[in-house]
Length: 316
Image 1 (cartoon, helix red, strand yellow):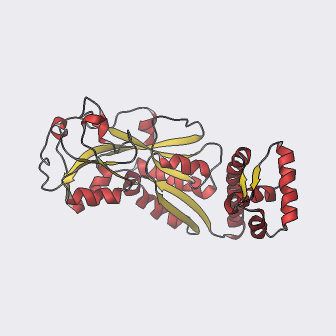
Image 2 (cartoon, helix red, strand yellow):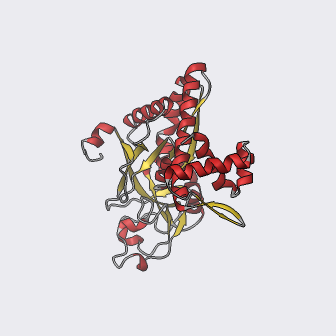
């Protein structure tokens, strides 16, 4: 199998016709057809389905194209890294971050990273749990920083615990419940939820509704923490928010943390990467700085230090 054959399969998937794929790859249509036939013979399976409307990938072709896309992306990264080492050309690192990580880790880590690796372009994506896993597996991200999903197969993902993020319940200043001290007082309130059901931003984890989710008022679900801040500032709603994120952004937007006496959950933030693919040197150095930044976190509701987390020490 040649790399050009993988490129052919991806071009067919994207373009939907032999002629368009041949134009993209700058080869003749007969040469493309021959290459495709050789690939099908090598794998002993039909890879594309032809019809009067064009071509589409067969199930076996979709499997091969998914793996091939990752292989081609990794090869491109290897070329980029070698070229960067040989000629000091610009390399790149893509990192996905949760809101808590973006506020308490990223500024300090990137400041030090830019001083040491000025030629590396860092691409930062906002990534809500658990979407980062899919982005890591496809190669869209080199690193992700955020919570670990509780369920699902994670054997292909390596992780490094960074810090424990305490959660607080927040509301706008002047909310009727802003002085509530018990969770039971919040059962009839309207909530804004962030992320997936059962995730760190879902108020269902507070066990306010013994009868189950059907007993609670329907929450507003946000896919963005910037939207959450805007809604919480303007509406009489409650929301769960990482303490560090609230400290950085919430107070400046006239939000308050409720003085609850009941214990609130916490979540551990991890650095994540693909276990079956070695990190590039620039990505590894960024990971090192994120770990160092976590170890030096101030005491503002986040507990830093990967050593304590590995030993299972409780958050202070």
